[in-house]
Every structure is written in C-alpha cells, then in structure tokens.
Length: 257
Image 1: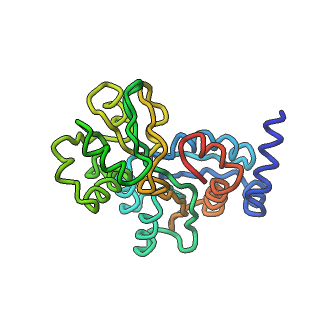
Image 2: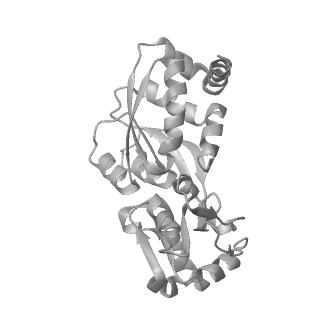
Image 3: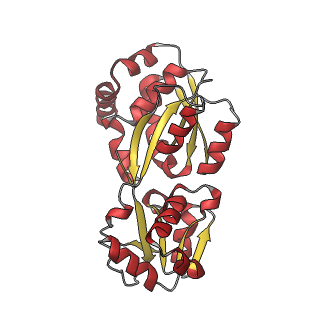
C-alpha cells in the first residue's frame, strides 16, 4: 500500500496535467515500438503507468535496425523509443510527430571481462586503447545489424585509427547480450556494449571506471508517431518515462535519466 501511495504521488508530480487528462479520459491502448536496450526498464515501469492512468501499453521490441524498418514502413503504432539521432532524422522525413521528441535516458558503453579475470585499467581513453590492443580477443555487437552500441564502437575505433589492428581478433555478436555471453564462455577476453544490455548476463565482471569515450554516449528518446490512434495517451507515457518517477527503474537497468 505504501509503495502504491508513493507511486501515485511521484506520478502526479512528474506528469502534471498531461497524465491527469489521460487518466480522466476513456482508457486507451497504446502500442509502442522500442529497441531492446531499454525494454527491461520499460517492463518495470509499465505497471505503474497503467495503474495510475487506466491505459494499457503494448511493446513491440526489436533491434535498432528492425525497429527503424517498422517506422519506415509506417506500421501502425502510437509511439517509439529509439536513439535520439535516429528520431531526429525520422522527424526530418515526416515519420515523427513534430514537437513530440523527449529525451529519456543516457546509456554508457560498458566493458566486461570473465568473472575472476584480471581487469585492465581503462579509466582514460588512452588506457582503453591500450587494453583493446593488448587483449587477445574482443567482442561487441555487429553494427551491420543496427546495434546502437556496435555502430558507436565501430566509428570510435575508426576515429582512433585502431580498427585495422582490432579486426583480426574481433568477434561480432548478433545482439547485445551475446557479446557478454562470449566473454562469460571464454570465447573473448573483453566484451563491449551498452551496460543495459549486459545487466542480466552471469559470469562476467564490469571494468570500471569508464573512460570519457564510453560514458553517456547513447541518448535514448521517445516520440509520438504521426499516425497515432492515441496521441494524448502516447505523449503522457513518454512524459512519464522522462519524469522523476521513472528514474530508479532506468538506473536499475544501467541507464541514467
């Protein structure tokens, strides 16, 4: 009971008139396209929102590229949660409702080793470069599959001029968690991807502190789609995700509000 009371107070403070309007209206069913990295936090937050508003939220969760394809195909949905640069580009193409993009969380890139293995010093960008070059093998998500972390890392390694040196010992994973699983299984010495993707993997240990090059590099945002059947409820859901009421769940799953 105490938790429910705290939730109602936090929601009221965080959403204001938008959430009140949604809760007084006829209950809506909201369909949300979302990438996989933020899905665990959304699962935790959905019951709070549904209890407070009476609305129902359904997720369609896929990788970044697959989610992008759904948006480009103009499939029916009310809202989307994706990387901010992607939503900005979609806005220019008329695939996002103008004025509806809201930043939700920052996601840092994490580095993991197998549990019990020595941890390299990566506190600086130069330290991370040395650790990558010294590692016998590394794993991170395949950028060709649209991974947000994989694409960021690929560009970073190219900018640093070490892509060619890393290529022979790089193992590209099919998604976020598989990169960490390769490390847990002993198939790679270092694993890199968004921390949120690694949170549930056993048999690994995070290497900290992170260097500036990996910190808060992926910005996740939400937006209402032009064809939304429930634009008001969709906007209230996104506003809730950016409110103080959502902060603890985002942090628990490796993201920062």
